[in-house]
Amino acid sequence: MSMEYAAVFPGAEGQSYTVKTSVSLMPLSMARTGETVQIQSIRGKDDIKRFLNSLGFVEESKVIVVSELGGNVIVQVKGTRVAISRAMAGRILTISPEEGNR
View 1 (cartoon, one colour):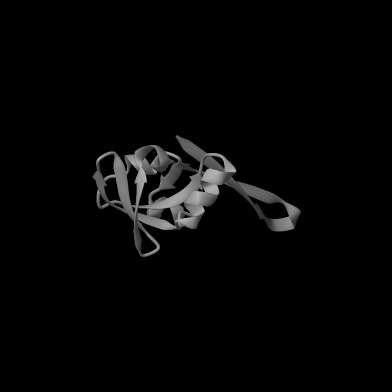
View 2 (cartoon, helix red, strand yellow; view 1 turned 135 degrees about the vertical axis):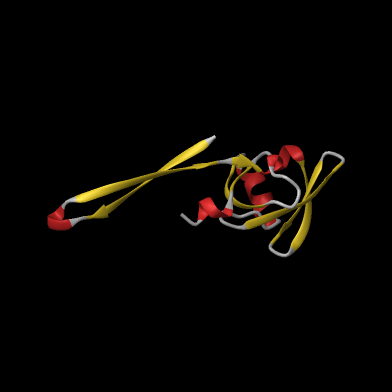
């Protein structure tokens, strides 16, 4: 899955130009142990988004995948280790930190 972004910048004599870029989105559930990713968005109903936000899963936060155990994904987010189900981790769309800094 990828998203395309476009930015419009003013140019000379009132003209403008557009720069387009795309990033590859990956569910957190697909990140490997030891990998650091950046949260791009969270899919789901408002109550699910609020729940994940309360655990520290907010857009542009960095997350480290610590391990996977018994169908759960253990991650470190904002200095705290949190275990969430693979299904819940699948709702969190991430990018590599390098892509987030473009």
